Image 1 (cartoon, rainbow, N blue to C red):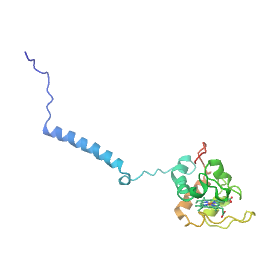
Image 2 (cartoon, rainbow, N blue to C red; image 1 turned 90 degrees about the horizontal axis):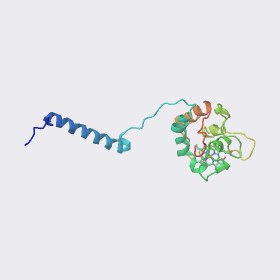
Image 3 (tube, protein in one colour; image 1 turned 45 degrees about the horizontal axis):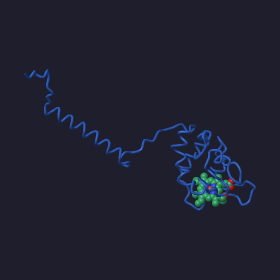
Image 4 (cartoon, helix red, strand yellow; image 1 turned 120 degrees about the vertical axis):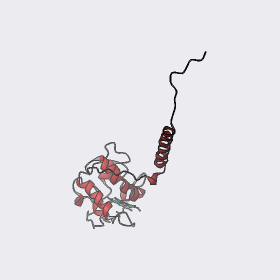
Length: 159
Ligand code: HEC
């Protein structure tokens, strides 16, 4: 003999529509997340004296404008930006980055297209070498980073 089921799952049309909408919402979100440009990348405002600021704001500038000549095996001017230590140490004209002092930093002076006198001829020219000058905004980011202590990842490799 059939016992009566204690309860039945009965959904109203309203509830079904609710589930459907929820599902569509989830699918929509996944789709949106999937196609990059539709979702603007969140830009966090970091203190320029943090490694997060370096990673998010400074490193992409170096990557886009410098690594092709100073990254990996490339050491134009005997200058490699491949590790934190090398990036600071500089090339044949000596220290490239003086933490806290943008005006004394060879790297900053070169991206500002300022003449430099190190006493070692030939003196280095503006950077990026024979390429368009960085935007004022990008130069300002690098300056702020140096001024705040030029904090780099301690692990060092591929900073
Ligand atoms: C197209 C190649 C090229 C690119 C891109 C480039 N550089 Fe250079 N860089 C050179 C060459 C070549 C030298 C050596 C000749 C000179 O000093 O003018 C040099 C030298 C330097 C020096 C001096 C090293 C020393 O002690 O003599 C610094 C600092 C430097 N580059 C920083 C940068 C930075 C920062 C960027 C990115 C904003 C950059 N460079 C992009 C080719 C490049």
